[in-house]
Image (cartoon, rainbow, N blue to C red; front, side):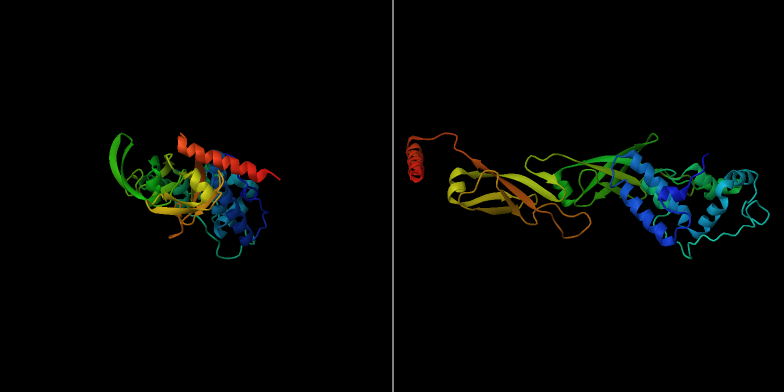
Length: 327
């Protein structure tokens, strides 16, 4: 088992204050969080490391023990394996007194249970569990085995754009360890590709009186025939007749909510011109009442055939164009 330098993992000095530790942890946790880096195993590993590091040095008592441990961690491990309390008066570290410069009342951003829910299973390393996880005695190990928390379960869920817009309740059939069960889950409005929805207590059942794990749903979004989604904004083509593009007018659009919108087209509108319909996009997942926008790109629709009478008018327009070019 290798010694873990938690200060190095957080990128701070051993003398760092509680505020410095908190700032370093928050910065790294945001950078490597699984929701920010979906599917990135290296980022998940780094997030586990910084979470574990702050679980120790962000807690004044654990930090004191960790600093006392220092380079003598092998002696600590041997003492604990022998059933001794290494930090008691008679233990190898019992008489030490250190100034951690951490102040009172450490800052806690995430608990061990939170980390288990985020990463599944046991989120912390063997080094952490040996020295800070309560593995020292048989009775503690027995209690831990009796109260083992159930594992978290990952499940992929495919939604249509309309379902992602309104939110949806679905009944899922889950198979785990040979057992089949049904679970009703509520998916909030605004989820998108890669969103991770946590359903508390719907994972694997724990042993004895241990808590159940959580169910994490990874959202996949189906492609839509009309709209393309980019974050909260939607993009679509607006079919505009040639005469409307030249003379101006209106065209009808339909939003993802099913509402009809009359889009005003100014005279001499060009192919590819983009118009915005404010607030007609997807809802925000975290801010109630906030929506993205709908962007309509003009596709000037040319006639598929030109009759005799229409041809005369187009030829007259061509003559007018040539005449206007004459000095």
